[in-house]
Length: 567
Image (cartoon, rainbow, N blue to C red; front, side, top):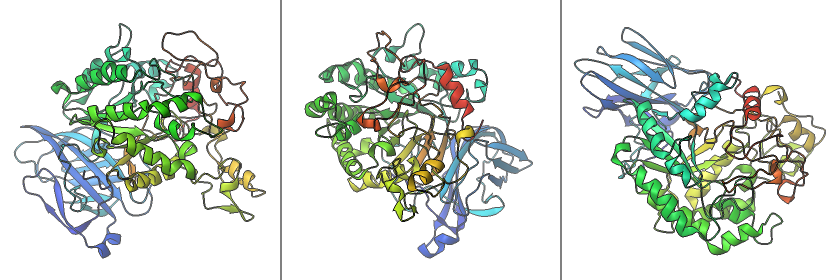
């Protein structure tokens, strides 16, 4: 797969005749540092009177908090609509400026937007672009000579594409006071039981969502995000998210869950959609962290390790879904507060490779990995780093960091990507980070580092993540919406996503009878004083929560209140 993130091309920009993409002459290594920015402009679809274009700009200069890309047309092209940028046009000159949610553009980071336009005659490609007035090189997206993916899959499915807005979630969000501010954001569609595939009289099934995505798509590209989540003995270390299938029901998982999903996704009707699948969250990492002689071990996880059905189930899902040309599989990779320790980090990558080469799957069936799914780990801690010391003591020795190698999700995701490549995954894999609930804003967000009295006061006073313990995962009090969904926000990252729909509960605060196979986990009880997995700390959970996946209005309001960036 051709999946280079920051290919830098030389100053002699050319137009690739008839290719529908702007091309360039590659730069030599010594010239790379002089390239301030690159622009990848592609005409994705074209017809007699119009076209759809996708643009990705990479900033190689100083970090920016806002940006504007400009170019001019040689013909009569007129932009008619756009997404992920505020696009205006005066004569032949076009300006695309950031939206409120994607203004941050760090050094080496990329951002993408797209638009529809009309034209007549010849649709000549722009020959020059500027980023904030500085001339950029033109990038053909080739990554400097790697071959294209023979499957036809694109490097980053999110680049230049809209992402499906689930109308069911959107309606619930819009019905909340102030919810219309985010009700148009894309979120994941959770296939968390067999019945979710066909839906019901009160809920949309998979085909209904795909049909709705086609309607939203128009003539541009559209990503649909699915969470595939129904393994046998699901989530062996928690009760709130236990599933409907018993530990040994691997055949039922294959034939009644994965096979019907694959049959629907294979329908040629949906071939124009880019379908991103998040494969079985909270599964494989449990086989590393919650088994054997560890204090965090559970009998259920020992069972799933022994029978191999997590590995078999993930491998089967990857093989069946990865064979579909427009499906992009991303495996769940936990988060930094789960796998960031030395004894979890490497073994987890090795286990993922085992799963990705079982049941007929190959590493080619894996387009990338996703971290922080349905979790709360801060994206970027700016007030301290893993290399800081206080009075000669490393922050790794603080109670909060507890010898972890990472302090936030971005550094973890980028490092884990490198580890995955080292064990045999494709060198171009991309990462997704779920930022739906890791903003940690509002009045509790520290403005700077903590006091240097001790390493604990320094870390605790400065950390954005305000959980009592980073092992706490259920309906966390004080959490806020994080970065809005966006494509290619940082090196190695395909997108920030809201895979967990904000406002959907992680689990009930007390036992609630149900027919969804969901148990009661004390980690969702605000009075619970904890266990070995959270350092015997209070759970930090909100009270009066409903079953996992059910709408939790109080949580939704708190997430909006504490959003960072603020709404």
